[in-house]
Image 1 (cartoon, rainbow, N blue to C red):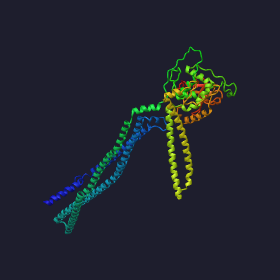
Image 2 (image 1 turned 180 degrees about the vertical axis):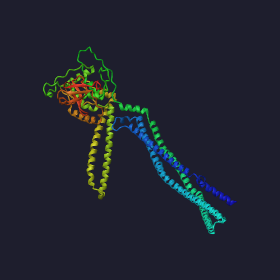
Image 3 (image 1 turned 180 degrees about the horizontal axis):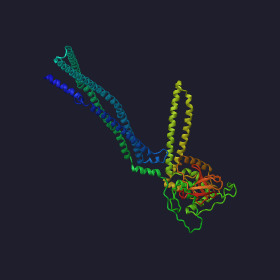
Image 4 (image 1 turned 90 degrees about the horizontal axis):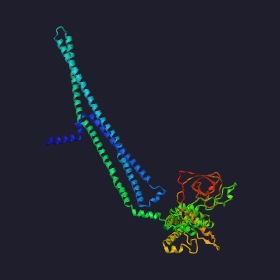
Amino acid sequence: MHRNRGSFGRNCTETMSCRWGTELWDQFDNLEKHTHWGIEFVERYTKFVKERSEIEISYAKQIRNLSKKYQPKKNSREEDEYKYTSCRAFLMTLNELNDYAGQHEVIAENLTTHIICELTRYIQELKAERKSHFHDGRRAQQHIENSWKQLESSKRRFERDCKEADRAQQYFDKIDADINVTKADVEKARQQAQLKHQVAEDSKNEYLTYLQKFNKEQNEHYYSLIPHIFQKIQEMEEKRIEKVGESMKTYAEVNRKVLPIVSKCLDGMTNAAASIEPTMDTKQVVESFKSGFEPPGDVEVEDYSLSMRRTVSESSYLNSRGEGKPSRSNSRGKLWPFKRNKLMSLLASPRQPPPPPPTSPSPGAVPNGPQSPQQPKEPLSHRLNEFMTSKHKMQCLRSLTRGTLMCHLPPEQRRKKLQAKINDINKELQKEVDQRDALTKMKDVYVKNPHMGDPNSVDPRLEEIGQDIDKLELDSRKYEAWLLEVETRLAEKSDPHRRQSGLYDSNATTPVNNNCAPVNRESPDGSYTEDHSTEHHLKSRSTDFDDDFDDEDPLPTIGTCKSLYPFEGQNEGTISMAEGELLYVIEEDKGDGWTRVRRNEDEEGYVPTSYIKVFFDTNAKGAMTYI
């Protein structure tokens, strides 16, 4: 009884282990179709993961392009915007977004490596394994069918031989009962019947042999061979299902692994948003645009009942530009601070009477001809024109032009520009010093170990670095001197007692302490004399300063002009032109007989209005300079 129970348990185990072989022994074709569908399912899932990977790559590319689109461009004005906390927070968000896109690229890469490539390789192996198993199954099926055909053939032969033996026996009995038949015929019929019986007996033995063989093979086929093949197919199918499950789990893990980094990216964006300080940004606006000038005072009344010629005070004119004093004009617009392009247009304009149109081929021979007619101007403009026509004040303005080109920035902004330039120079200087120290150490190593290198080979580079260091130190001292000068003037402006006591000289109409204009002196007879040494010194400093900080946009063109005569621009602020040359007009004649033109981005200046024919562009927004 116990033996039977153990046999039953073993049979259950075998039944469970070869369930397909016992329960699906006759479903060979259906199993073939099912396993084929299983492979197609794996291929479909692989295609799904591949398309998901392509979506991740495309999404990451679009995110990167979006982040790159809004990144600040190099050497652009947008870089100045990132001194505000909100702009820096936006830049941090863009950087985090770029990292966020990188995580989606990681997802795509891991999906390709751990799922797509693995499943593609596994599908090929699965197809080969399935083909092998079903090839064995078909061969076993073919073998049992052939054995069945042999059994059927022996069976039919045995049946045929039995019928022939029966007919031979009946024929023998019939002849044996017939008295008219000879004994020889009877004996022949008897032998024939015996022969047929022997053949039938041999056929029977053959049939029984084939039958026994077929039963054995059939039993082996359905209880051993087919279950073994089907079990392998079942294991293959279970492995396929398990592989799909592992791939789905990997699919989830690939996405889960990037979540911590994605979370950090999102935390970075949150921290960037939290770093925004509105108060700091509004304070930065003050730091960026604070000019250091004082607000203008009250406008003095102009008595039109007086018939005397109104002139503008030289000291008030210069101080309004040098010291930032309130302008005493009746102009209705903002009197101070001037915009840089307007002030420079005023200072750089050749305020000499333009030469008249030539009557001979050499118009340059008449550089100081009569002035062109003046147009009616506003009161302040009229006063400035009168100021420009005075030779005494004309020379003063020329000195002011040479000495104040570097004062186009407000004091506070100029101080910041100088400080930033000094910081950049110090950084470059530190790099050169570090490089010199490194080369010095290398030379010492070469001296102690000649086999490592020639110490003299380092000397040319050390000499070159020494020259660069000397140049940088010279530039640093120069900019520090400028910075000290600006800071001193700002300190003087902040001290009302010093400003009131030192701003004007009570016995003179010219300013005693002018911030930007060069220090001038008067001749013994009271006429104005320029200090050429100071003028040359300030001119060179202004040129260097403008080269570093002149970043204003060029004026837009308001039309074109054609030169009627050749003109040689010998005065400062003018530009030469040939007869028939086409130029761009960037500022129209303000009534002083000069028009501002441009040849290219680097060449612009004033030419006599009477020497050109102007074609204004009615649609252009010209650089109208109003004072």
